Image (cartoon, rainbow, N blue to C red; front, side, top):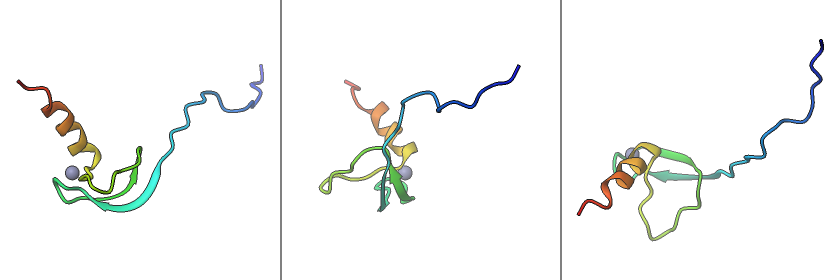
Length: 59
Ligand SMILES: [Zn+2]
């Protein structure tokens, strides 16, 4: 049986924003973000972003 090469499945096309930022937490260089960063907000790398997300809601 031969597999026909059809169009790629999915439809999950993540838009990445290219730029040049520095992580406000660890200082890592960030060149790509899965979201559009706000200028008046600190930008975090992927690791720190998750950390900060987990940090929230601790009452
Ligand atoms: Zn970081």
